[in-house]
Image (cartoon, rainbow, N blue to C red; front, top):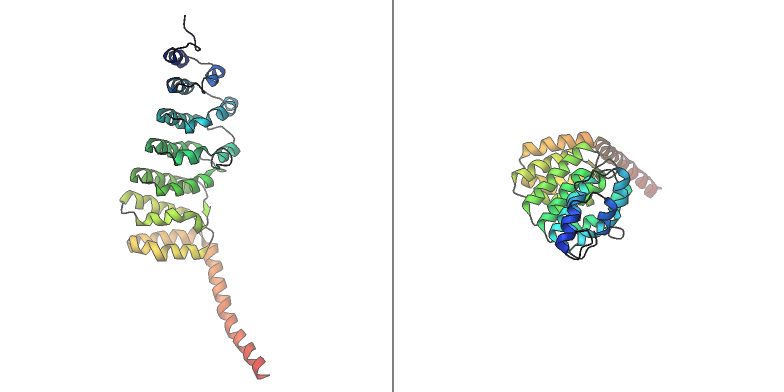
Length: 265
């Protein structure tokens, strides 16, 4: 007779792979053998988890992002896709190393497989109240060494910017700016879509963005198309800029006259 607490790790793994009891599976998440931890995650992946089960189970899984086994870390990222009903505030905690830091550890993982799984995971966790944070985080992942991953990131950024209102300061877009230097058709395609969809908070950043970078790497026709969309999406910024410049231009002569009259007096 075999049981889940058998001395043999192989037996424990075989028994847990058939287990449907979440309470039992949770106990063996911390098993010292990676074979058992893998079996637990594979079993959990076969179980339908309602919102209550997701919120109860997640805290006991998060440490697995730092597991010594690449397969465990990969399975953990995959199983997180099932947690689409967890509270958004908890999702945001995973962007902060002072709290959970799960996504940061995954993005810094030495395994490309884990970093790729992370981007796929984000596709399942994007909501209105997390979209902006996901967008900012994925922009920073554009510094990855893997071109395939950078393309995957840019594609996701395009999707987010299309489906959600993304408003960012130019300082948040550092790696997006540097991506204009990519000599890759797919990257440029998705980058154009992202730039056409997002809302900027500062007009000077927009102008600088295009003046210093875009005209160097894109055909003029593409640039004009992007500019047209950006002006449309950021019309208030452009109008404010024009109004401020017009006001300065009108005030300058008056200021000069006032100064002259004071000197004359």
